[in-house]
Amino acid sequence: MRLLALDVFRGFTMASMVIVNNPGDWGNVYAPLLHAEWNGLTFTDLIFPFFLFIVGVSITLSHRSLGPWGPIFRRAAIIVALGWFLGGYPRFDVTRWRIPGVLQRIAVCYLAAAVIYKLTAFAGPRRVARQAAVVSAIVAVLLLGYWGAMMLIPVPGGQAGDLSVEGNLAAYVDRTLMLGHMWKPTWDPEGLLSTFPAIGTTLLGVLTGLWLSVSTKKPARGVAALVAAGLIAVTLGMVWNRVFPVNKNLWTSSYVLVTAGRAAIYLSVLIWFIDVRGWRRWTKPLVILGTNAITLFVLSGLFVKTLILIKVPRGDASVSLARFIYEALYVPLAAPKNASLAYALTHLVLLFFVLAWMYRRRIFLRV
Image 1 (cartoon, rainbow, N blue to C red):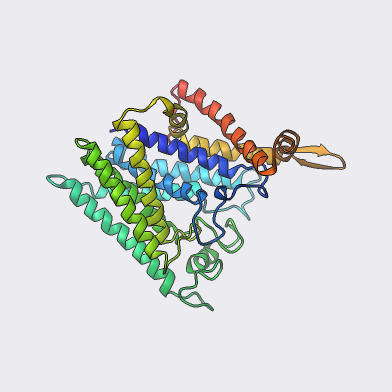
Image 2: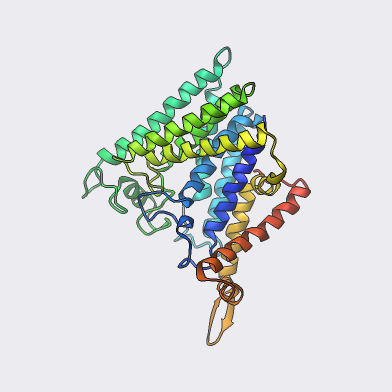
């Protein structure tokens, strides 16, 4: 089964990622296009969990998920390798090379979810219900276990339940095992311990895919039930937020429920209008972006780093090519925040043309 709505959702998520990652000036960005400073949720904080949720749904729709083990492990290994390449580019300094990262987390979450999906694919009657029950139990263990660990285990010299930037257990684990190889000196938003609840996000996508697979005969009822499930997840997440705050950097259990619930709702709306009602004419640009998502992520990262690497003389000093282009073409164009957004949109448009060329020639790098 293939859902056009899923490709559209993936394309929208990737387009959002490109825009929020590439402003012309980080000092002039609209608030929704920035991450929450610590606790809380902005539009930008939805992008990564949405993508992991989509990965989970995709696992249930791909014939490769129940095929040989080799392609599953190979795909995860290639994504990790791409993440490490981007983390090192352009200097590849092994003394400061970042070990975790976005692609690395995607690979680990994909691998864990695909393995769980494959191992729980029961045969016989009520196979989907049995599989969903087991996957749900695993999600509960991951989210409750992470909550318990973060709130009950004190770090040396600290106290249990400290969720501050440097005092939390996840940051301590990362410092102990990866000091000098993280995004920040003392913590990393894609660290080791917080990957466990991120796997929970992906498995909630798997549960959504399982539901969609058994609701094809009554799509209206299936979509309505998925919206209801999303609303329940968001509500539970907001209740949990009172004792375990919604936090993207820590990938808290409440954050998992709130973002996965919203992803389920948004996907339901897209399925209703695109796959059920057949409103498809407007979807092509997002489909193009969504069908080569990993390619878009890698190209975007290489493009922006290369523009920063190239230096252009200016007076007695030099600036990056990115800064030179922004100040010469965009700063005079509009107010600061609009100029910064226009620069990001141009970045997206240029990459779209590359992916459109690949799409027309049926080149899909899905690793």
